[in-house]
Length: 402
Ligand SMILES: Cc1cc2nc3c(=O)[nH]c(=O)nc-3n(C[C@H](O)[C@H](O)[C@H](O)COP(=O)(O)OP(=O)(O)OC[C@H]3O[C@@H](n4cnc5c(N)ncnc54)[C@H](O)[C@@H]3O)c2cc1C
Image (cartoon, rainbow, N blue to C red; front, side, top):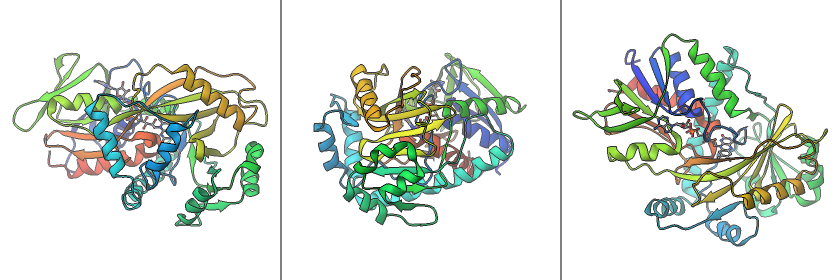
């Protein structure tokens, strides 16, 4: 280690909190700045709950541009696009299209898989050391394919049969009987028995509790802002006042883009709006394994006695209020797929912005400012990649000449 550092992290979502936990573990002093009253209130609040370690292929892939056209024309589509007079949106879409080829997808999927698997092993250590109470389970993940060509492609892409298996429709229903009604409508499924689930907000809360027991940790409620400072350093202000910081880590989700702009750093982030529902299913309907309905891009995870369903990628509607039409479409899709999902009622629906890069690969890196590191852009996989990203960041801090 390059010595004990005094580190300030901007952002109390799952990315900032896991970074804080890893850096405290490495012996640093850490201050976390969060503008909200509590941690995990934005994209990390009610996400899909999947720790999808073996299924990290980025959205940008060969054929996605063609599929997207189909989705955009289809009613109740999982993806919607509203083009805007916004150069950021156009640049992001161009970057996304350029990443839509098999070679780039494979390369980026390998980077994400490394991050994910390193994070899974580390999370096991954190849990062994007492991090608990976030409804964690390791039930495995089943991805169901309705389209036979997509299923065949997915089955051919399995690299380690010990970690992923291609299943027939009837085998899928043995693994997860709650989806038995789909048997005649699916071509098959890919099962990853080692994948996990958890409640991301409760995970954030568990991290905050564990951190606040550490004398080297301090949490400050306030709004951070960055500006160029002296020499090659950036200056941090919190609630308008200068804030002394030896090393700053920007981990503020989608807000990172605006925070970095005064520094002349143009982060390739775009907010992909998604929805989740949390229901109390009727007995026998709560899936044991986590399930992805691939063709509809809907994920299902049992969290305690609740079912968490997450879906939709809405591009160009980065205002956060839920769109009642999209919510109604999602409820109809879930009711058609898993009758009984709403049997015991439903909690408040939720909407969040995935802080996405065009390639799906997060930015965990130094910057041209000696005292600023980035940990941003985790898109649709932030819960899955958080711990691995924190380890990567810890390595950069250890080697950082800052
Ligand atoms: C519908 C949906 C479903 C999803 N499902 C899954 C899933 O199943 N599995 C998975 O792995 N991932 C999933 N994700 C992705 C995951 O939720 C995100 O990638 C992750 O939460 C991003 O975390 P973050 O910490 O970067 O951002 P956030 O959680 O948004 O945290 C950023 C924090 O920074 C704070 N902040 C911002 N600006 C400032 C400032 N100026 N000063 C101080 N604080 C500031 C904010 O208040 C916030 O608390 C899903 C996302 C959505 C929207």
